[in-house]
Image (cartoon, rainbow, N blue to C red; front, side, top):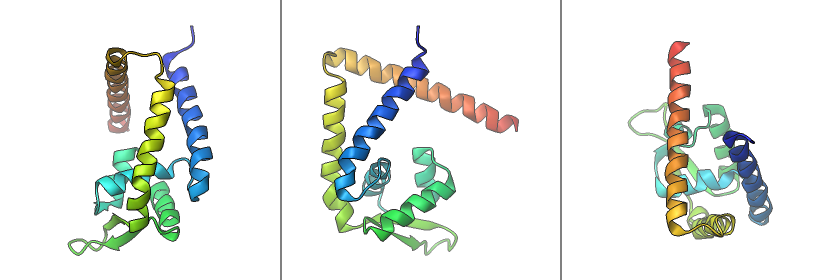
Length: 146
């Protein structure tokens, strides 16, 4: 039997390929949606907090935000309370594409969950949440041990 994690990795890769194809027309990469959605939902979030929220290291967050800033989707500003913190805000361009991104993800979810009842979808989401929390716990233990 194929491992659950291997199946999850395959699904994630296919989702990335789908987003890559669909987001190309907006000049976005397959992971840019994550940044735009989270910045739109949390205007003024710190760059560090954003990285923690989406499980991406600081240098990758900085690099991706620089690309999105150059493309006009976000703006970064130094915090008035702490000059070391960069706060990230959505631009009008990001707010305009927000519903497009949410619809794109909704369509993907509907297509890949076709054939699952609402109850089954809910149970699957709960099960995946447990796997995610277990994964976070394992990683935290490893980090604390070092």
